[in-house]
Length: 162
Image 1 (tube, rainbow, N blue to C red):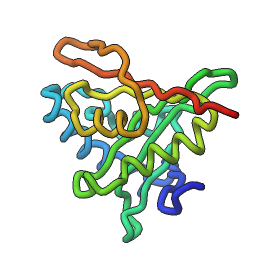
Image 2: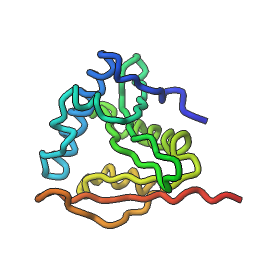
Image 3: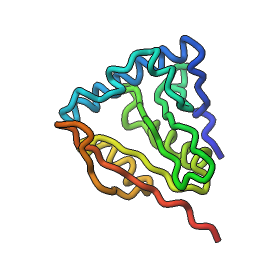
Image 4: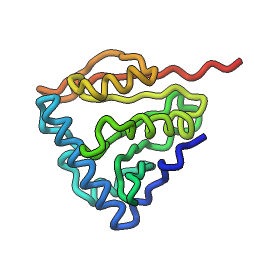
């Protein structure tokens, strides 16, 4: 059953899009510091670029009607073996309070369903690595999409059916 604090986000609404953009920049700034790389594409993304991405969005409420975190994915095509998380961001004020776990569980249950799930993160982002490993993701090969940036890939197998 989905968590009642996790809800769809409509980036057509200016206030929602602006909140997502602000929160994303704050979260990616922390990741940039953790991994020693400030060229994260989403960190430099304009509001218009963010809104133009073909992503679906869910957010976690902070209890006061604000946004504590969000997760986005591109809708998997029919026949895709895995659902892929595009981005997961938590407001730094809400770090280590279970927000990221709530959002990933929502994704696994409501989006991935019976499919495998995939995600990447900065290889030196220890909190994100621990999150994904703690939620049953298996670390795959690291890769370097840009000089100075090492990314870790993760895969969570599809649940077994009986």
